[in-house]
Image (cartoon, rainbow over all chains, first blue to last red; front, top):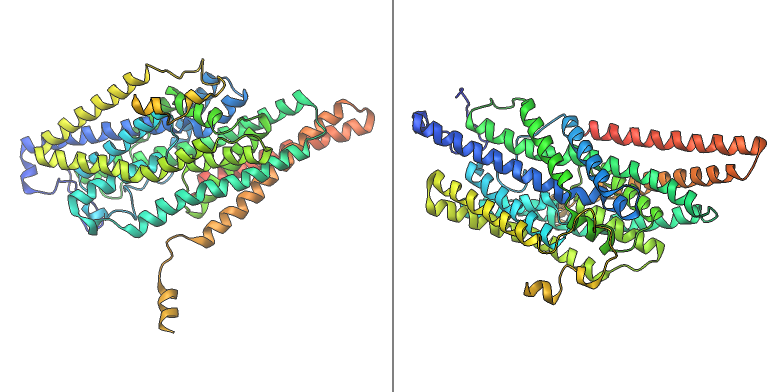
Length: 407
Length: 84
């Protein structure tokens, strides 16, 4: 341990007691730190497979890329993007929860909430925001830990809830216009030349989204791990993120991306509307430009919501069938993301506190692994994989059907 | 008057000015990219059915479109690298 000095802006993750000097405590603290790092990497992995659809669903759907090649390309670009992240902030849910009240237990419970919601929505094939899930988990845990005053509700509404409603409308409107423009401009170009041209352009747009995803989302996990290391005393305050942290975060998100998230890819690529190459190109270009512009101006728009909005907008622009029922289900899921992940985070924190000490965290980690494993086993009953991801959409694929609910 | 002062001091939930910038810049660059790529595809296709100087001009135009799109991609990557 080095001479880490706590100040008002740095979270106390439970490592500032004089008793931590005891050998036993140090061992427990290190083990807790390891659990939090592993959970953060688990979240990074789920973030990867959950968000593959944002970049690659349209390219897979239009046949611009074969499914396996698409996820491999996206995985590599996510890894490269992780190394392009120049400034990592050692924070979690900044501007939404009081950073001074964050503890290692809150971080763990928040990550647990994010992971579980990501896995549940993946099972249901719902593209929901991983960042909103993580924020929801942390807010829920913080409410149990420190009460209402520790949550900045202004930030919850301004950075999460309102942007969640605005993002798909903005992206959808631009994508509708872009699709109309693309089709209008190439109306005299015959079949395959147009398709091939837009397919190549679409791969470029999808690659840019993957790269941007690596720079943004891998960086968030790096921030969480750096935060834990600083507070544990392993790193001094304001220290640069170690290369090994960048590497493991990049590898985790790349592995998750390569895992595929086929269920969500199917919903985005086939469920929302029927895509051709011009629509796919317009949707990807819109997603990339909206994301880059919003990141540049510091407007927190979710990649998932921008991407889904773009796909729907491309359907409107081409005047093809849009499955509004599924769109409605997505909107409901987006609005539920924060409360649902918050509920998991709050329950997790309450249970680990009730059990007490590090044992509570260890047991909750085991419960989390068991639940994720169970959902994964359930998904095997109706698998979606590279072979069937592009099959025609039918009513049985709908996210919420009476049979699905009964199951 | 006090209401006006209070309103002017309050912090907006959403940065609407920033959001409007995002919308028009996205529309500008997104629409611009679509326009350039579509023009490139049209010129390239047209070049295959013509000959002589016309073919050369069409091909040259398509190459210029490709260069412009590459420029936009490089600009996008630069934005990623320079984000705060």
